[in-house]
Image 1 (tube, helix red, strand yellow):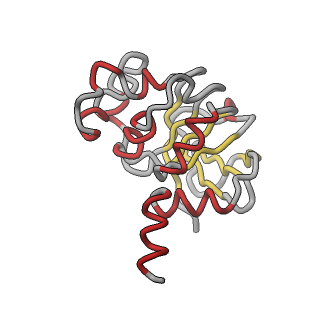
Image 2 (cartoon, rainbow, N blue to C red):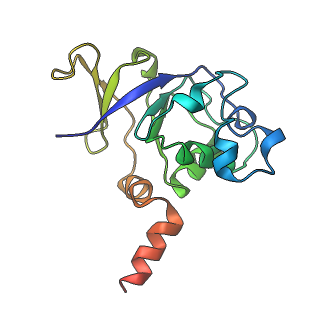
Image 3 (cartoon, one colour):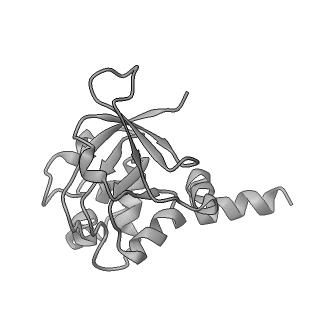
Length: 168
């Protein structure tokens, strides 16, 4: 049985400045994470729990290439970000730091507060709205290459390489 993840919705074109505000860049990642998205969604960071997912509109992670914009979500325990499109740099940074980024053209069908199971092998999100025992809908997403899924599951590129060379 797959794990179910609580959904938090955010809008379109979430930029890296909203994710990791410049005013807090001198803080360590744990402190900076408390300010994630506060300009657009006050209180969201305080309400996120480990394993939650963020569902966004198109253009997630636009802006600068700062890795902290991914790092704060990892720090907050976010399992995945699901969106119709991502900034290319953000998408790559996500996997490098251990965050699953799922391209899903129909992400707008996933309501706030619902639960989702993420099946990366089948490229499907199983949506659970009211009855957590029975999926209400399957939503097909773009296939995420298995090497990227493995990288995110390992905790990112550095963690994956450390494990690989520790066992060699």
